[in-house]
Length: 406
Image (cartoon, rainbow, N blue to C red; front, side, top):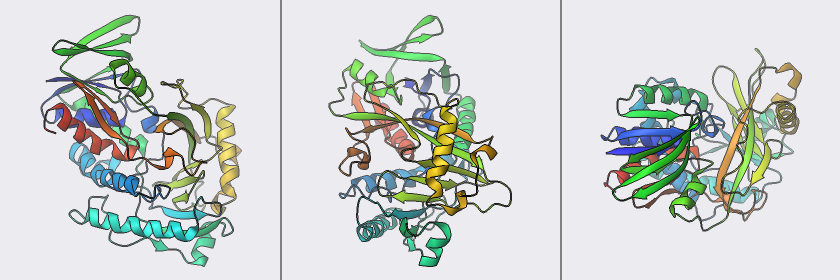
């Protein structure tokens, strides 16, 4: 069976690996000159256990995310090897309840406890599946002294240490690219922009543009794993969207802390338009914050081709704005001068999600991320991962669907 995978982000690459390992011959189409260089590489790499989604009182988002999280490391280990640097993780995240959270602190604390119970139950069959972290221990409430040591206690009204970690998406991207390049049943068509996928008798034809030439190539099945272009292609083949969506351009800042300086703990600030700190190994730190890092919103079927690495003055605006905003709540950032961080990287991309309003709205669909996954129309299969966390899980589901084993 010949399968076209449209989109070379993490979802597309994982789907290609899952199908190729089951015997399919896979071609990945991507308009960029390398795989995993856009949105898939421009995020914090958090592998969500569900703690972030207190805005979804049904717990459906939390249940969805923890299933994806428990599938993530086993998938990477199977394809990249147990010794791959892609499996290295950040320091575990402290969930910090902000003074201006959209729910009372005691309700959020109760939510964290409930989610932990679900995680422990879900992980019981394979306790080491989440990067070897102990998922049996509940989130530990920080003492007042601990909270004051890491955060401004006037803004951080409560805090809980969790087992939730992040991977470095740049390192994962490098490892996955190498794996794909070495796979005998996967080929790549880079620099090829996909325009359509036509159902023709007993095959589907991928229509695209490669340089100055046209592309029309037949396949048995087509997987739409595009990120920014997925909705537009779905509509073109008859999979109607039928609901509101939003594309948000969000950047993050990463840099290595000056030698000897005290680094901030990994922290996720909830619940509402806040942000997070991720402390990876070797001094690398990632920051993102609302609204400094959110620079555009589009409700077009396909958003503009926003820059992954913005030039100045936008780069400097994001760097300075992020540090300025986060210094209020993270004391370890107060001694940093943006001008003294010339190697700091500002990177970002589109966040694609269902919803008509931004996360400032407590009722926004952005607080609920469970209506995602694989949707099929004949030989055409569209994958909406929702979050990076879900890519390996939905890759296996997609392989089941495509190869007729669902």
